[in-house]
Amino acid sequence: MKFDTKLLHAGYEPKEHQMCINVPIYPTTAFDFGEVQRGADLFDLKVEGDIYTRLSNPTNNILEKRLAELEGGVGALSFSSGQAATTAAILNITNTGDEVVAASTLYGGTCNLFSSTFKKLGINVKFAKGEEPEDFEREITEKTRCIFIELLSNPALNIIDIEKLAKVAHKHNIPLIVDNTIPSPYLCKPIEWGADIVVHSTTKYISGHGNAMGGAVIDSGNFNWEASGKFPELTTPDESYHGIIYTKEFGKAAYIVKARAQILRDMGSCPSPFNSYLTISGLETLSLRMQRHCESALKIAQWLEQHPAISWVNYPGLKSSKYYELAQKYTPKGCSSIIGFGLKGGAKAGEKFINSLSIPIHTTNIGDTRSIITYPYLTTHRQLSDEQKIACGVTDDFMRFSVGLEDVDDIIEDLDRAIKLSQCV
Image 1 (cartoon, helix red, strand yellow):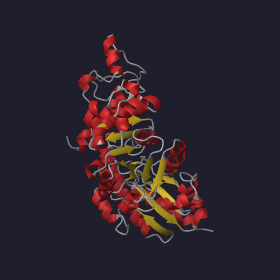
Image 2 (cartoon, one colour):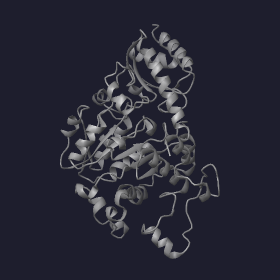
Image 3 (cartoon, one colour):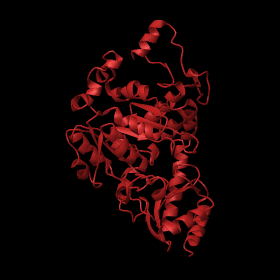
Image 4 (cartoon, helix red, strand yellow):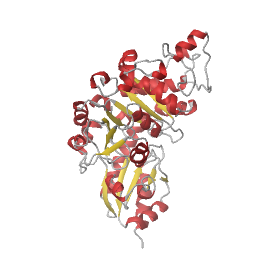
């Protein structure tokens, strides 16, 4: 099946679900084991099946299968949020004393997770001082267990050359983890460029309607955990499962099976089946929504670039962007819906601008059907130090605009009116 067909059919057989055309919601906490031996086999991971919704649920399973097919992975695991997915992706292959090398231009919440919470767990995250593959390689030590980046960073919108960075990671026998939230698999499939693990906040474009929290981890199945020699969690006996060795029992799916059997089991950050149902419903229109998002965002970015009250515009789809060539390589169908721009007048003008808008909603989400404006300096990145804000590309004049599906001319008219009012002293 091609991409658009997978959006509607991948991972689902109506005959296995009472011939329901739509994916049904399974609002149950537990499942009947049947015979005693089958229950024992389920808990020993000898047979497939559902035990308890914290571990798996038929509705969640269908979403996972669909995402795995869309990204080109061997398996996927759904979570209650994107932040939970990122946390699990890292914890699945790290222990106290290990290190992670990450891009410095990550989403503010991820920066907090990496620099504060992981630090308390004894996991040290080193942020690369630059965007080139060699900037990441300089931070790698024998303790490094993975490299983590966002394909299109939130909110700086920088693009790192995945193909080159994957070669650096593999040279040092560690996996590359890519957050693909902003592009979605419609615009780019990082696994095709060498990424080993993909994470998503499905709350954003995957769901697309601002009505369901969720996250996901997709395993490419391509990384050789045994050959690496750095991941005993996967290659030595797990005493919590009677000494099972994941790479021996599950081969290419070792990483994603362990993430479910151990991390999700113990952390309990599973999604509600109802949220998975909403996410599946939204996912069906992903390609149509992303096309409209990209077309409108490019038109608005080009308009903003010519506006006298706008200091700068950051959108990788603009020919003036330093990321334009990389965008043509990795996201040739478009650069998603996020536009960053600087409003003349700084904070005072910014406040007046946001308060004068009629169509965009002032909140922190992105990837909604509705247009959303965010002032990262005082919201999403507020907890970061000034140094961290600058590293993330967040200045006091910076506006993050997530373009929705409204008529693009209506959006431009509203922006123009608010910008003019913001400049009135």
